[in-house]
Image: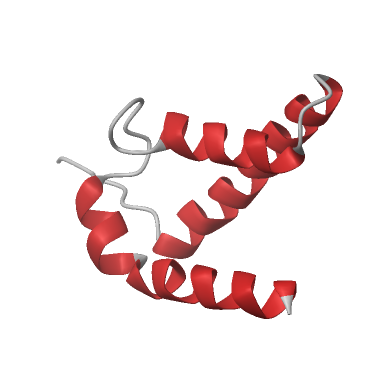
Length: 78
């Protein structure tokens, strides 16, 4: 019997938030802006480097997050 566990997309969102927080803390420790750590961590765990987040999941399941993020950023800056 083969068992395949596929975590829900919200598990990936929570993991991404945790990892980006960690990246921000590391960047802050290195006297760099936190956003640098967020970006580097996002590139590292993305599908092109480590592949922690599968491309299909990012393009289909997390499409809501990718659409909301730029909008919420512009509202925070206003």
